Picture (cartoon, rainbow, N blue to C red):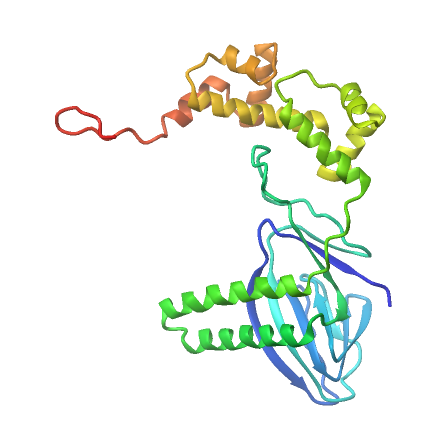
Length: 311
């Protein structure tokens, strides 16, 4: 059996939608659906499920789990030939995902500023079909999710209780994903070096940085610097450097009264004209306009009737 993996960006985090339990008699089929908007995660208890995704046929056995992708054709390629029982969970993501023959790091859909050093670009890896790991624990969690979902349906008019049940279900679902996820594959040498290049650029953004210097620093050919960065992050070193410098510049614009020319120098631009051009291209306005617009949005300090500012 060829292995397939679903790699799902966790920025934003996948969201639990609904769950259920189903028993099929011999001769019955799984629903025939096209363009269903949710992932379907199945946990088989008994029997065999003959399920297809577009033109690919699968046979899922008792003790296995299986994940269907959204927006594809799901159908039974063969009727059940024995009593078949499983739990199902629908979940959604607005983030990026891909199905492939191996786990792949997936770029976040949310643009995380380079200044957020410790925001991990976490990718969830799920094997499409596999034996249920920690079967006893996983089924216990699934039954809790199902019971929780059922209580929420029974109490649909109680908004407070519904809110509590919603957050319980989300937490249980995240715990379940942690149980069934495939461990992150070890980072390739390309990714390791790309991460080091990123850190170096962020630590030396106010200096002159060249491909030759980066190649020498990390013992690779200068041409490989851009290849490694694009393969890992989807951007070139110059793009990262510009992005990081401009993000630093916005902090100086809003938190200091320094002249624009001084800020340009502090973030690594020797020519204010090039700085202003890059800033306007990125933010759609000049540095001075940016400062004026966003400082004016800050709340003013309250003043009492005697003209004294409250602190």
